[in-house]
Image (cartoon, rainbow, N blue to C red; front, top):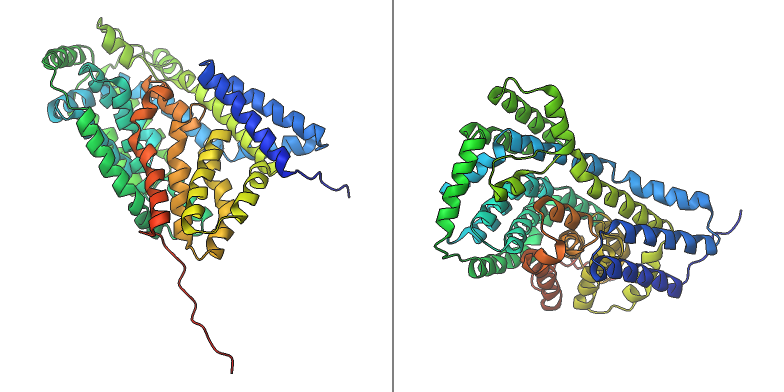
Length: 465
């Protein structure tokens, strides 16, 4: 059999740096959407692979294996697009906004947003669902109150990430514990050593930055509530889909089925409110999104969104990043680049720091949330154990450096979804996404101080007779 080409450390570093330059210059430098830079990077990796004499069959296999892992998330994104348009048309999101205006304090709105999204995210285990449902309603309220949209978006995303990270129903939390071979509930408990400090500091920052004393706010809120009451079905029945979401989470019904159930409830509510609704109009709305015609420009801009087509940009990015990740895994480029560093690490602090930055690096190179957990998990599992660190130490590092950081990378799947859903660019909400920024910091501090850092039990020394 023909021997597989060998990839050297220098080659791996060169390819990865060129990838980072292309994506950074394209997305940050020129401000273009990430799809084309990622496509150029894929072409670069394929060209390098052919120069190294990897076969087309191996290249295609890498792409196929990468995309296969994301089939379910791809379908979920399509369903979320439908859900958003249906929830607006059914009056669910407008009802949440009206209820929120009555319940939440105007002065302390931003920290309240962070807490609400954290609670809902923990209950349902999905940051994407939290952002695309309750998050849209809260964002609309914040916009009405003349608050900084980037600050409100940062609070929504941070709360949703906290919930996703600490929920036993979360895909990313289950993945991190599985990759590290750690018990799920012990993993969640151990996360608290970095998660709770990051949560508390974030809450204080949102309270400080988001304190609102504007006298114009109440007038604008009143106007918006009147517009919503006049043009949408505002009713307590809007709580039913939210309740259904919590029930599905409690029953551990998968995300796809949960979203379909909620879409079905929304469609029924639309026909109850408007029995004369044409099926063709409903289908068009589900495909292309809901378009509001209230006469109020700010409300129309906020509530004209959703639909399958609105998700196609994110879906295309997922396909390309998964393809890129599949190629990098096929040719072990990231693994080869990380191995020499991992072997030189001596202290607990340096090992934890490297693990955190390993997850950050994968996010920067690939922009895919799951791979930022899988690749560092494979690279650091053996070094962590050899150094006497428990699998729980690794699983927390994978969350703090991988899961939460994807929302900060402009070409990342999670950040692109959040930016597209809320209408705020990643680089705008990034400075205000405090929870994602602070989680790695507290994880690294844990590594150097030893506070909350789980170690393997020491084996008793036995004397040979």
